[in-house]
Image (tube, rainbow, N blue to C red; front, side, top):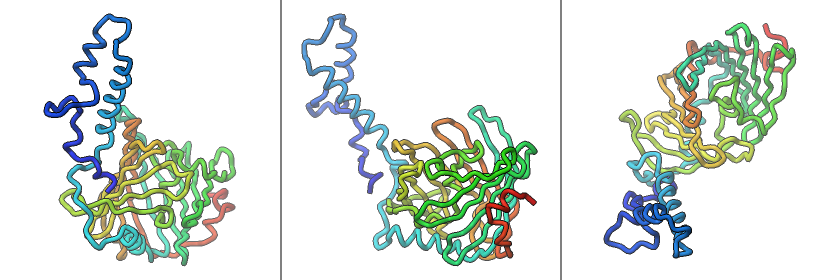
Length: 311
């Protein structure tokens, strides 16, 4: 398993092993050499070895798994089967409406709120259509995002800005950008994502006392803002417990937490999503104040023309 390759005993620096001869100088030797006032060490390979020593320490520090207590994968279970089942149990909602509250939290902890409505229209091939429209505050009222999901292909997305009085198509290269100043990217707002990733079953873990599968997702689309996503799914219902998102450099950029899993008309939904950016210290929460499923939806409202004519 990729995140279990580093064993605990390997995290010691070479200079901490007193029973073995190290090829690298110890930290004490490095400090002693630096404290001398000689213009350069007599050993021409000293600084090269010191740099290798430091690199080794940093490698072990940052390559540790997210949870060193993670257990090996359960035999006979495949990643693709878990993710396919998790996707299938979300089908059948037909039409959906949600009232939502988006809270933006800056690095100092100050909050600002947005109110928005969500409509979902399920297509037979699960290439669903969704519409998000802001209702508060007044300065962004009627701002809207329309999404046509395309499976493994690039999704079509349009952002309507009332000040411009027109909808602007979002380029594939921009879908990793922030949605309306939040910690949610445009690509995070696509409901059905099964066909967009390759999957790897990393192992089993426990979240809030419940057993979870731990899955690694790697995007098929090179325009994704993520190099990989590590997702914890509860074994009992295959719902997401939490996720870690890694940027294109492979560094952890944000964490996502799902709360309040419950069933609405037999289909699983959550009550709150929290995203924390570990690099900027900002956060966003999305609370679902009202959820209605299996309702009729007007296909005409999911047209670009309708996007530019708010009701």
